[in-house]
Image (cartoon, rainbow, N blue to C red; front, top):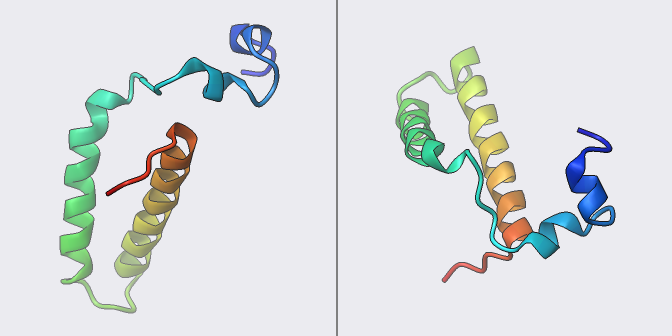
Length: 80
């Protein structure tokens, strides 16, 4: 939402950095997302490599990996 309460509290581009740890309503969905990712990985080994299902699973896995990387950069996660 452009121009909402968050934009009034923090200057543009500084809100996420100044708020501290990211805690969202999406946290409870993490186990479900992990199950979906596991299913996609399992299915990607079973479906025909050039099928539409393989393309859809590959696309979903790539999108998820990109989103995960953006979240990690946002929260400053450094992995071990």
